[in-house]
Image (cartoon, rainbow, N blue to C red; front, side):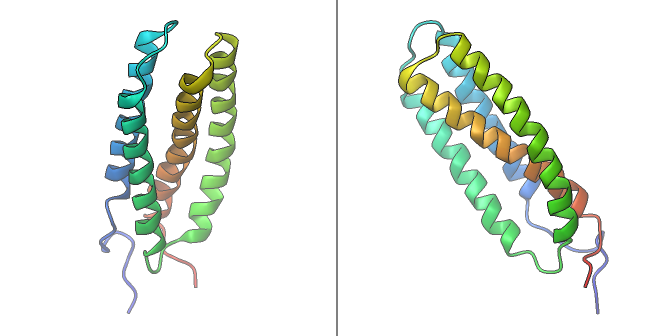
Length: 135
């Protein structure tokens, strides 16, 4: 017996992704508040690690979903990832153009990479969760 997409219980992927985005935003805002000076990095690194751990948790939870519309997930996710890779590239260019350097640039780049990966997963999950799995 198959379960309709609206009737099944799914893990809190969207909520965990939103929490990860909050950690990323907090870290970027913290670092940007110090520009053009160098910020103490400990708080930003902690937020980066929290965001990364939440995204890893999301990947594990997603991988355990049975009967999920993976073809639709990857179809939507590919295009969203392309769009967000372009956006992240432009933002990274702005970091470098504004002479952000060293460890501060590294932490901001890693946060940007997490942002670039997180949003397409959220978009793809939101679409695929309401489609019945094929086969």
